[in-house]
Image (cartoon, rainbow, N blue to C red):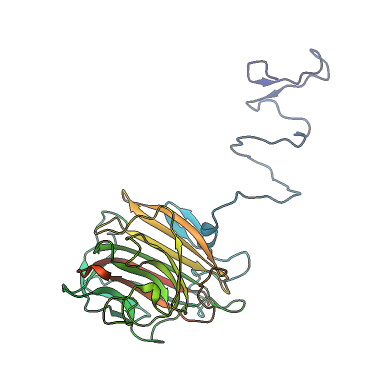
Amino acid sequence: MSDGGGIIVPPGGGGGSSGTTFLRRDGTLPMLGNLDMGGMSIIDLAAITAGSIVLDSTIVPPNPVAADVALGAVNDGYIIPYALQSDGYKSMMQDALWGNVGSYLIGTPSATTMQFQYDSFGLGDTSTQAGFAPAITNDFTRFKRIDVTSAASSIWRSAGYIPSAAGTNTNYWLGNAANLGGFFFACAFSPKTWGGNGSNLFVGLTSFTGNIMTGLTANQTDPSVHAYHGIGIGCDSTDSSVPSIFTSDGTSVTTKTAIGGAPALASGMNPLRIYFYASQNATSIAWRLDQLTSGVWTLINSGTVLNSVAHFPSNTTYMQAQVAIGSGTTVSQVAISVGRIYIYGLG
């Protein structure tokens, strides 16, 4: 009990007796014995200073979101990947590990093209590129970015970056044994010109080495119907401009995982940033989608796709980056702004 003056007084004992002990809140009188909480909790503890803490039991941290565990801590809107995971697997940020592979794609400082480190990419369909100088407006504009625009035509068109050919790019895979495979993928982008409902999009990793928007017919083809292994954020012409997470196992069928709260794709919308992460020999792929809102990257949603889904990429198939936008059934000119693409293989 308290005497009202900041002094904690046990209810037992009388004045001056050995049973009366005062414990001052301001710390002017020290404890002369152990504090036994009787199994109860200490609430709203600010700090423990001096001395050492000896524990005879396990500290249980709060339960974080699964995707944040896989992608690393989120600090002020940035993903901070692990340097070394608790299971001993290598992290994507250990550049000194020569067995790892990486790709970084960003607009060149003085040209209108995308600069590819360790990779070579082609342009989708009859795309043209236009560069923009960095600006301090926000985190999307502070990097050199490239707008990739399709040709204006009365037929279906697409724009974006596609792998040049099978095997020519740095390859990424899930891994089929300990210390093999794994990857981290990140891309910041925005549909600069969206054709409306009927248009299509794919941003992610795929084993398909051609333009994922076409190839099966003379006209447009939705990305989900191609025979590829991969994962990406995608939108078919039948998806009413709402993207979802695409996974495919090479059977020309795609599993679409809904992204709760995902905004409908639209021309000039606030940029999106998609992440995919798989540890070595992974049986799941974590994803996270952010949107630049009022100059700050804000989480839209995150989750994990397990290999138990109907269509999950093979753990022995190489995948490569592809960023593509298509007019779909709208037969209109489309364009996509690409801020940067970052990929890192763990082994």
